[in-house]
Image (cartoon, rainbow, N blue to C red; front, side, top):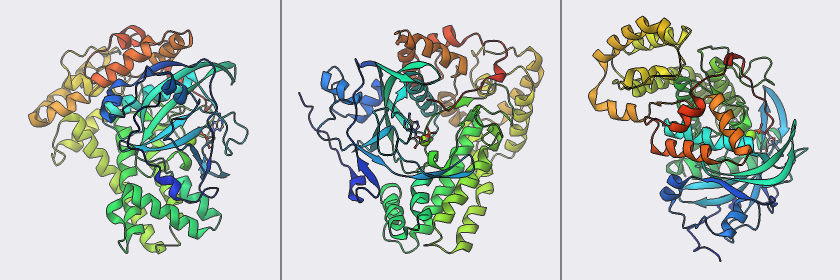
Length: 471
Ligand code: AMP
Ligand code: MG
C-alpha cells in the first residue's frame, strides 16, 4: 500500500539529464532487514512513512522505489590525495529528491553509470560507521549529513573478505561538492558550470539569487562555512580521513564518512587512513587541506569572478579558521567569545591534550560534568587538570553552561566501541547500534550503558589504529 505522498520535489531534475546526472533504477538487496530506524529524526521530519510496511523496507533496500522518488546518480569529478582524478560521480548512491528540507540519498543501492570498477554496494560495517558517526557529530552540534536508517541483507559483497551488503538513507541540506564545479570547469563547459553554480546558489543561498555579485558572495560563504566546519572538527578531535574535493560539500556539512575517527591521544600527525601514506589528511593538516580544496573551488569560478577578488577571499581563510576555532572552543567551554582569557585557556587545554594519559575529547567533560569519570587514567595529569579547572571556572558564563553541557559528550565514539558494535551487528545483534543511536538522540551528556559496556575498556596500543578506504 502506498504511503500518503509527502511533499516531495526533485529540483536537481531541472538540470539537463545525461549532462548533470543519469536516471538509475536501484537494485534490490537479498532478504533485507532493518538494523535501525532513527526515530528521533523520523519524528522531526514528519515524513508520513510507516516503517512497519514492507514497501518501505523494500524501497530503502534498493527494491521498488516509492512512486514519488526520482532516483538519479549525479556526476562530479575531483582531486583525490592532491591529484586530479577526473570523472567520479555517485558510484553507489542515488539522489531521490527533497522532502522536509533535506535531500534524500540512498547509499549502497547498486551500480550506476559512475560506478567504474565498483560494485555499487556498501558493506554493513561501513553503513553502520556512517550511521553512528554522522549522528554523533550532529549530537555534538557539528554540521553534518544526517542518517535516517540502515538496512542489512544477505547479499554477499566482496571486499578484503566476503561481507554483506547494506543500505544507508542519508539526508543532507545539499550533496553538491566542490567536485561538481570542477567537473565542468576542467571540461571547459563554462555554460554548464554556470548552470550548476546558479543551481547551488538557488539551493544553498537563495537570498543571493539575482544579485549582480552573487558568484563572489557565494564563494565567500563557501569559505566561511568550510572554515567553521574544520574548526568544529579540530575542537573535538574529529579526523575525516579522506578530504578529497569530491568529499567536500559546498553546504559546510561533514560529508562522506569513510575512514574517519576521533583522535584519542593528541597528535597533530595522526593519520587514520592507512592508504594515506604521506599523511596528507593527518589530523593537524585538516585546516590546510580545506584551504587547498577551496583554492580548487576558486579556480573553477575564474570564468565569473576576477582572479584578484577570488584570491583575496581565499586568503581570508586562515584568519577565518582561527576565529571560528576560538568561537567553537568558547562555545564548548561556556565562555563568552570576547573573553580576554580565552586564548590563555585554549593554550592550557592544548598543553593538557599534549600530555599522555587523557583522551582528547574528555577534557570538556572533565570540566563541565562533575560526575564524569572518564575512560583514561588521569592520575598523571591531575595537577594540570586542577589548574585548568581553576582558570576556567573564573571565566565561564552561567548563561552558556546549559548549551555547552548538552553538547559535551559523557562518552566517546571510540574506534574500539564502533568495532565491537559492528561485530555484534555482523552476528545479527543490532541492539548495540540501536542503543547507541538512541543515546545520541537523548543527548550525549547522558551516560550510555552500551558505551560503558562495550567501549569502557580500550584495547592495548590503540594509537596504532588505522582504517582503509574499503567500504
Ligand atoms: P569515496 O572515497 O567513498 O568518496 O569514493 C570515491 C568515488 O568512488 C565516488 O565516486 C564513489 O561513488 C565511488 N565508489 C566508492 N565505492 C564504490 C563502490 N563500491 N561501487 C561503486 N562506486 C564506488
Ligand atoms: Mg565520496
